[in-house]
Length: 511
Image 1: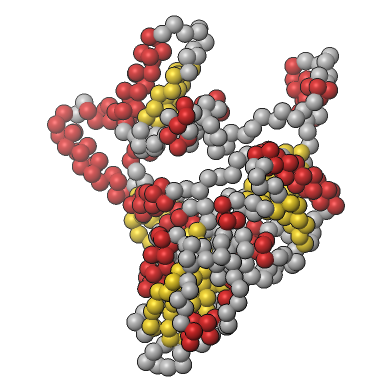
Image 2: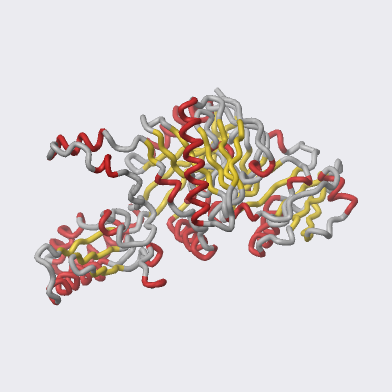
């Protein structure tokens, strides 16, 4: 146990744990733990409770992974969804309504509660997931995947997407992926116990029949998820076409076993991303029009918070966007039938070695033998094609220290009170909502980004929230004092935009 503190990461989904807190004994059951181990733990928990002298109210309670009670979560340091207690209320607020009691008192207290929720500002930054942990998750999700079919919107119909194009997405297109997953038998619990008891009494023939049924059961036990992906420049007509055509067809094929997940570019579901094994490539424009393109194109490979959230996205072909901590891919096309062009994987001198290897893999995945392919290290660029292709050599950033500190908060009063919430570490430009105010911390500055449709009340409350956050961070990280900066939509400076992968023009409201 690290420094004698309980951490959520200690709990393994394949195991069962007993947590003895003297007045409470908790039995935590991992989702993938064997049934026999669960049964033994429940019996052991009862015996353990009776072995020591405990208070009369001592109880043994079981918690299934994902359904833990608040009292159990509170025993762990920084459990994901345990909120900090608000110690900011003054004595007058605590001592209010002394003559009231029962429900009336509770209602009065609720009414007079603080009208702003700033809890998110005081929670620690989400730590990045280790590569080993991300790869394990990727492996587990891909083990459950039985098959994947892809479709792309062409005109007014969805056409089947060739398998060699899986992992290639275009900003003006819409895609549909039908994924079939095995549902592990361990997830089904109590319902089967009674049936199994009856089966045992039927003798050997019954046992053989049961054995055969158990062998067949996993084949029948599946779930289908349809992922709908929309590029940030694609029309909403793709979604309407899907709901009135493909979705109806899938629902009739898999009644009761279908779930639909709608996603927009760079806001993808991690499970969906895992199926492309870090080779998730987003090109600009339309799929059909892209093949005739003769202009050089530049792609940046970037990981946001976890290797699961790795994308290779086309950005402006501009050398000022290079960065020594990242890897980039530059395509310089030729007007020749024999040799389509030359492609470079540019490896920044401070980039992660795993990402450098990934850049080479993506290079080979993206382009066939009709292109010349070359991996080059920063500082070894060939003058004739690389710098000419990228459009002249310009100064660029030599570090991405901000990646260790970036956090994005949303300030809104849409719930009827002012609340600050934090976006996950895999945020993107489209998380900047026009009718809200966003706070971006890059480790040096805290930017207060103001959308065009925000109210004066939101601006005043957000400014106060910024000041509270800066003061809090000064006490936590006194060696990195933050400065406050005001940014209006459309006037973002480079130190702000570089915190977002593939920053470009804001998307217009699409029909």
